[in-house]
Length: 131
Image 1 (cartoon, rainbow, N blue to C red):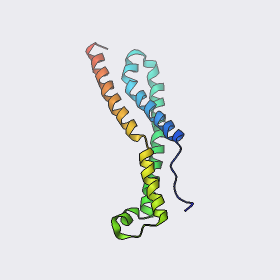
Image 2 (image 1 turned 90 degrees about the horizontal axis):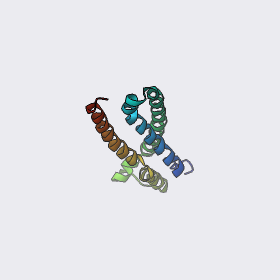
Image 3 (image 1 turned 120 degrees about the vertical axis):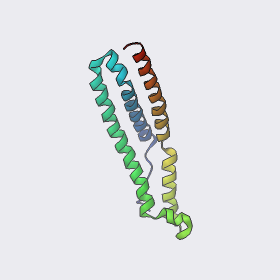
Image 4 (image 1 turned 30 degrees about the horizontal axis):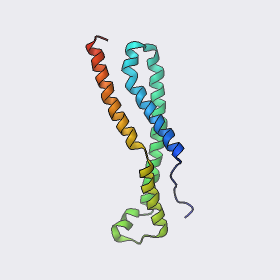
């Protein structure tokens, strides 16, 4: 049972949440930056892209870790009643469920959704004002 996956620390969870949010902000500000300070466009774009590289690599790793725990140990089949659930299986199921509950991805999705609407609204307003 020493091979059981573990959830990452709250520090890591919040670090990658902030990286994802800052990247999202960067992309949503690009039209405004291009309108008022075009020289900052490229550095802000790079910041956003590099941030997303780290953020999505982290999210991919977490997602694969969960899926691997489920597939390798046939957890779906076991909880659907076609296999015996051992104490190690319970620990793995606990890991997967705890990992989902601890994840802040829903906050990231909500933030990106709201910020995207705001970015479109601001861009439309700037366009209407002739910028």
